[in-house]
Length: 428
Image (cartoon, rainbow, N blue to C red):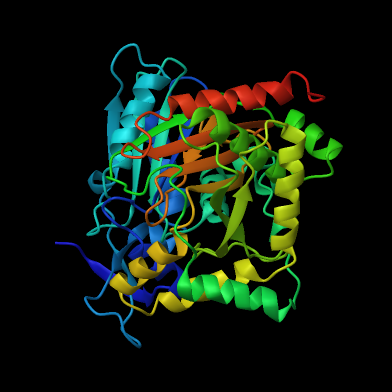
């Protein structure tokens, strides 16, 4: 029988992400770490329990969700005795053990819910990949957001990773800065979105998700090339990446050549001096960004994305949405799902940008040579794109509901063509 060790009240925004979990769209972040050679799995497993499970209480707590959420009766983190058999999976990929076999395995897991009777994470230790060992970490969004997940990974690597404490850029990017005050018109527009949602989206990627997922990823490209184009266009790396995604949607998705596509983007609210607490958790709002899919000119798309993002940066939209997510944590699961469905119904894609470690992490005697993650999609949305940088390279992870996009490989190919156009000749 599971031993109970005490409980704490779940933060409102974390409870909201717990309640967003639906059979057709699981709120689980799937992250893979490519190791540079064979892995010493017993040592790696032991270090995870010593440095992550023992340090961060949410990794040794199960989510207790009451049948009725009202007043002080809200979800809680209940600490339990963690049994390794509940969380560790040992896997060998079938031959030939390439990324196709790896992504097929991850796709199957991405469609599988986590066990709510135990802490909401799994560690899959994967052999049989030609490039070396691979780790799949599955963590529910209620545990934390992108920055907190990377903080946990950095902690797992520990002091043996050279410069690990300073290797992750936790500063808020330009899109995270907001004015303390904004116009009533801007706030009223945002409040209207929160209360009423937005008009239904154009039929770009379909409206119905089925629950089966498929994942893919671009190859890594030099981050410096993307930074170069950002500098030339007076934009951010995030602006450039969003413009690249818009170009890929134009060419790699049937029916996406509309004038624009709406995307939902998480925006980190933490200040530049705010440390990530051991409680981890979520501190971000959601904003709508228009992707200009009508243009074939990368610089024109960057210009339009930048103008859109600049407008968002000067508003309080992300903060207001975070406040709404926090308040929703005290409401029912059905209320949360109804609100997120209404709020997100105009968007066709969720896009997240995760700035990973600038230097390679090391797990025991083995370096992590690369990483990629897949963001969970929200409400009725069937496509998610993650922009992930690591050790000087950049890659995009794509997760698609197969009812919306049967095989994301075509979209990934379009993304790689967009990336190739700027990494081979940034003047194009």
